Structures are given as C-alpha cells and as structure tokens.
Image 1 (tube, one colour):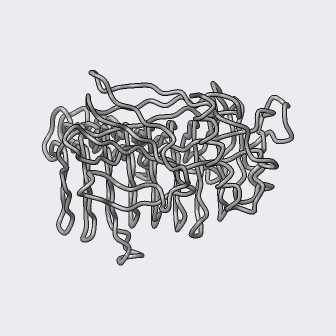
Image 2 (cartoon, rainbow, N blue to C red; image 1 turned 180 degrees about the vertical axis):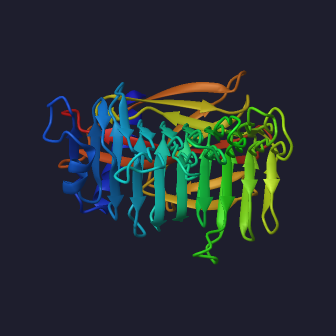
Length: 433
C-alpha cells in the first residue's frame, strides 16, 4: 500500500516537473555559519522564480520580496524571527509566494524597519501564509502630541490572492504621550484594502490602546479584522473570507480622571461600498470601551458600514493541516478535521486560485486543472471528527532540489454536501538539505 501511494505521488511530481522548465534550487540561510547566507534578504537576492529558501533558527533583519516567486520556510523545529517585518509587492500573475513557519514582528522605531509584521501590496500573484505568528509594531511615544498608534500585524493593499492558514495575527499596542494629548490607538489584527483575502483556522486580534493619565485621553482598541475599500483603487473590490477562525477586538482604555474613554474594537469591521465578507463557523469577541468616562462605545461582533455586506454561511468549517518542510523519502503528516462521517479528500494542484463559492460553503484556493492523480489522500472521519494520515514522499525528479505544491481539503458530509476546506502548501526538499 505504501509503495502504491509513493508511486502515485511520484507520478504527480513528475507531471509537475515536466510542466515547468525551471530546475528549482534550495538556498539555506543559517546565521550560525552553516551556509553561504546569514540573512534571508541575501538569499532572496540570488534566488529566481521557483526557488525555495530554507531558514534555520535565528533572529533576522527585515526583508522585501519584490516581483519574485519564492517559498520561504522555517526548517523543522526552527525558531525563525524576523525583527522589523517583511514586505511582499509587485508580484505578477503566476508569481506566487509561500511563507511557512516564520515569526514576523513589525517595528516602527526607525524608518529602516517595517511597521507591519507582513505587508502585501500591488500583487496579482498569490501569497500563501501558513503556520506563522505575525505581530504589528507597538505604538511609538513622542512629545508634542505626535504619538504613533499601534500598527496592524497584517496590511494588504491591492493584493488579489492572499490566504492565511493556522496563523496567529496580533496588532501592536498603542503608545502613551510623553507630554499630554490623545493616547494612541491599538493596531488592528489585519487591515485589508482593495484586496481578496482568506483566513482559515487563524486567530486575528486587535490590540489595546495606550492607557491614559491625567494629561491624555483614553484610546480605542484595535479591530480584529478591518476590511475597507482602497481610495486610490475604487474599482478594486475588497473580498474577505473567514472560516474556523477567531476574530477579536480589543478593549479601549481611559484616562486616570475617568473623563474620556476609548471605544472597544470590533471582531470584524467592514466599511465602504464593494466590501463583502463570507463568514463560516468563526468566533467573535468585541472590545469594551474604557472602564469609565464619557464618550466611547463598546465594539461589536461584526460591524457593517454603509455599502458593505456579509454572508453568514451555515454549518461547521473543515480543515486539513500538514507538516513542512518534508524531505524526499520522509513522511508527510496530514490532519483532517470536520464532522463525524465526513469523507475528507486532499486535492493537489500546480498553483493557487481564489474563487468564492457559496454553494460549496467556502473558497476555491487551488487552480484548475488539478495534477493527475489529483487526490493524494482520502480519509473517513470517525466519531470526534479528527483523523491523521501519513504519506510517504518519493524522490523528487532529477535536478529539482525543492518543490512547492498547492493543495486544498474537500469534504463530503453524510448528506452528500460538499465543503471546501483550508488550503495547505506542501514544501518538499531533496534529502541532502
């Protein structure tokens, strides 16, 4: 049986290799001296479309991915922290980026750093983010009333295909004034403008505003998810999808004299014409206004402004997770989560997509046609709704050091209904790495 599974996966890998003339390389980043590169940006500078950057444990400087299709993955068990955030921009159609197993921390203390843990801007290509912890910059106190607010952990502007899976996303806390004046707001978990974004099995949280004293007012808490139009691109609609995720607004704060209270953040806030959300089986927490004082108001679970709308889908979300990276001749570990009696499938594709599908209670996140054979795993879910699967990985095709495959779970329930589940990217490496 294992030989049969390995043969089917090998056939799929060979099919993909024949479709792509590029022999993908793997670049190792190790600040301990175990490779040619001590910083991720250095490896990015020499990488070409289709390459994989494998990162060992360490603290790294911020970096930019500009018009380049790469996979950046923290090695198994590695602690990879990027202090100062990263930016992905100017991806053309077909240029796709995968980020896995990274901790991204925004920092606005100097102009050399990025205020968001992750900023995605002006991208036609797809960005997939999985198993990452992402934090916005804390606010920056100053004198003369010029305090900087906490920043969103994720900021997306005109990103046409962005999807998160199994990520923790937390905005940055607001800053106090040094000489009085309003205290700065907490950052949103994610701010989305003119973009198409999905969240699967994620925690997305706004941050507290700064606490006031007798010189400054209280500050509002950040929203979990803030989706709006982009004024510079009014025809670019904003679409968000959330499934099996937790969206939390933060509490507002107040001043020491209990005079001015900051408002609580919303779990999800939607604004402007053309902003549409589809929401399935999420939890929502709204922030409370500052504990005392006038002004301010409590947040809402879902706040919908003029022209915006959302669809609340019925039923429960489904999820498929995988380990990464996996070396050839190693084992791919999969977890299927859904309802008892479901049949869970993992479909394999050469590329990503982002197509909403209300009848299938989800979003199609892999492209068609699928790679033959397209089904790499099928499991019936027992009582409890969770089952594991292990798949042996064969040798990669000759000349290919690393490969990224795009997969998505599809579930059939006992009544014959079809459910689109989470995406998961398979990052495969030659066993020499």
